[in-house]
Image (cartoon, rainbow, N blue to C red; front, side, top):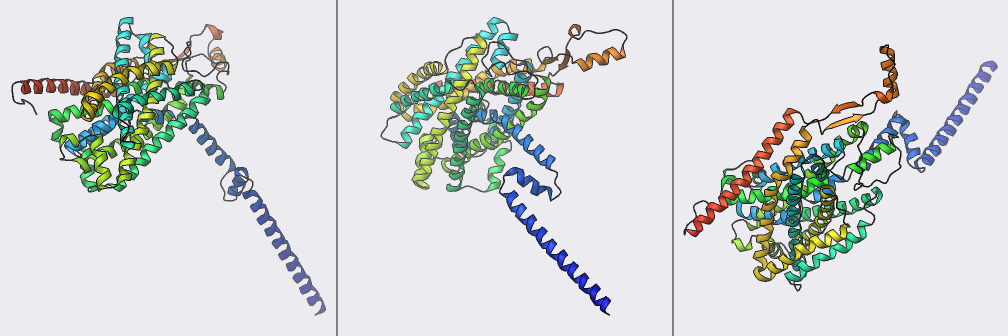
Length: 545
């Protein structure tokens, strides 16, 4: 009995000791866990490993996200071109005249824009040239000059919309400032361009500049989110039906406004910009991965064209196109649809004189409240300012690429802005509000007219393998493999580089040609419709309506 009692006591002591040890271990683990939680992301990963998630997998995910965010930026920059004052004007006119029926045109134009920008990404990645540089390198001199003139016309048409939009926005926010003075105040953005131009050449400065533009884009989106909440929106089904084709698209005025939406959405100058913004990132990728040495400044305007490696093309191209698609759908399509829906809900079947920027501002201020009108005017001002910055970058790339003329961005901006400001001030003084509204609509139709000339070389360049071929020097491993297979000893330097042909396949070529023909047909129909309509007015009746 005594032995049994002794054994039970020993077992009890052992259990007490085990419980004390277990409590001590749990307390230690708890303290360690609390310490790890406060140590930052490295300690958090240790904590996550207790949940059976490998630490290496977490680090790989974070590294992938870091690499992705290094490439983010061009999509935001390009989306700015699709929310400028010209888009406001044509979408308000379309919504006031046809309510939601032209949402379909906006959707199709957005898809066309994504398609063409995908070609721009491929052109810039594979050849190392932006669109203006490619025209100079691959086309006869006379044709390059002709396309340069077309590009400059589209730049001036774009800049006029920004001058007019800024003038209207200033007048709406501060009614005591006349339209003429508001247009003149748009010249002040040259000061901002002068400040930015000293740093935007380097990738670090370019990134800061891109984040500033991102903030402007997000500001416009927030304004229209608030705007849609304030207005009396129709049923969701009625709005969604506007994204389906309608017979209204074949009316003369509808074709004119559809061309305006097309020109305002597939902005010609944004194609030049889209083919150039990716190149600094491709070179950065090659430097970060040891493919080339960091011996030169990452400047997109260098006279020596950098040819990206096959590794950077494969790694970056899909990311660029994905980011571009997301930005254009989330920001550009949303803002343009929101403008048209706002106009369709507020201005449909109103007198023509009220179906403009001034009319929708007055209506929102009276029916919803002064805050709604102020938000609309502020969004217009942000759009005009951000689009003006993008216009300057595009103009710089066009002149330096097509003619090898390097002008300081702020000097070019000053010249272009003065050319655009003078006629805008004259029209504002002589024709007033209606004249400025007509200028906005006409400028977008001009941009649509320029589009076939600018997209044709883009389609040709990306479809021909002689331009879309990546030449990669052979590695020493490939040389040793060839020597093992054959009896002849090959010299690495004597071997031709490996060639990877990346021209468009037949499916992409057919889609590109069909889209180009549709754009051309719409512009021809628009011109013929205007001519026939004008002849009818001269004879006392409208032949075509």
